[in-house]
Image (cartoon, rainbow, N blue to C red; front, side, top):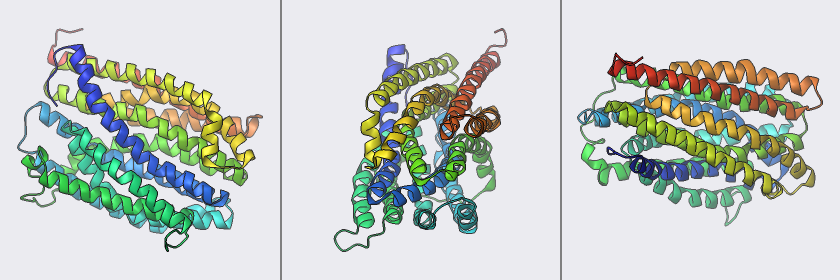
Length: 455
C-alpha cells in the first residue's frame, strides 16, 4: 500500500489490489463449483448430496472467515499509521485464534451433522453423500483457516497477487484430485460426491503450506518475521480481533445462511428441483465473488487511508469501489441472460433439471444487482472498523424481511420454490439501501471527529 494523490492514481491502485483478489476469490469458489459440476456428472444423487453439504458448510465457513477477515482492517490501519512493530505479533495471535476456531467447528460438526441431516426430508443416498462430503471437508478446516489468516495479512500489505498465485497453483490440482477421487481413475477409489470433499480438503493443506513458505522466505513478508520469536497466546489480542470479527462474521453468516435455510426449506421438493436450485445458486455465487472482491479491496484501501487520517481519500476509494461493483453487476446480468442455457447444462445433462435451472437463473440476474451494491459498502464500512450496525442490518433485512417474504410467496402463491428467490431479492435490496445510509453516517462522523466545525 502507498499514498495516492489523484483520482487516476487511486483507480489504478484500487484495481491493482482488486483484480488479484477477484481471481483468488473466483478460484476459491471454483473449487466448490467444480465439486458441484463434477459430482453432477457422476449423477443427480451425487449432485444433490454435494449441494446439501455445500449449503450447510458455506454459511459456517463464511461466517467464521468473517472473524478471520478482521485482521485485514487491523493491519491496514496499522500500516497507514506506520505502526510496523506490532504487525508480527498481531498475525501470530490471529493464527492461534484461527486454529481454535477450526477445532470448535470440527467438534460442533461432529455433534450436529447427523441431527441436522436427519431433520431434512432427504433420500437416504443423498443424506449419506452429504454427511461424508462434510466429514471429508472437515479434515482440511485447520489449514484452511490458517491460510485465510495469512492471506488477510498478505492482502493488507497490498500484496494481493501473492495469494492469487497460490490459489492459481492449487485450483488445477484440486480439479485433478476431483477427477481421481470422484470417478476412481488411475487406481483411486470411486467415491462420487464424497471424493470431491477429500480432494478439496487436500487442496486446503496445499494452500496453507505454500502460504507459510512464502511468508517465511520471500520479500517483503519475511521482513516482518511473522514466524520468528513466537509470542504466547494472549486473549487480549483475540478480544481485539473478535470485537471486530464477530460482527463481521455474523453479518456474513446471516446473509449466506439465508441461502442455506432456503435450501433446507426446499428439501420438501423433489431431487431435480433441489439440484436445479443449487446449480443456479452455485453459478450466481461464483458471480458474487466480484462484488465481494470489491468489498475486500475497499477494506484494505479505506482502512489504510483511515489509519493515515486521510478521510477524503477514504471516501474517494469508497465511491470508486461502489461504482465499479454496480457496473460489473450489469455486465454479469447480461452474461446470465444471454447464456443461461449453457450455464445450466454445465451442471447436469437431464433436460428437466436444465429447464428448472434456467428459471432459477432468471431470478439470480436480479438479486446479484443488489449484492453488487451492498457488498462493496460492507467492505468500506469494515475499513472504518464499523461493523456492529452492519450486523443488525443483515439480521433484519435477510432474516426479518427476506426469508419470511420468501416463505409466504413459496407457500401461498403460484411461485412455489421460486418464491424463495423473490424473498432473497427483497432482503438483499433492503440491506443494500440501509448499508448506504450507514456509510454516509460513518463518513460524516469521522469528518466531525477530524474537523469539529464540519456540520
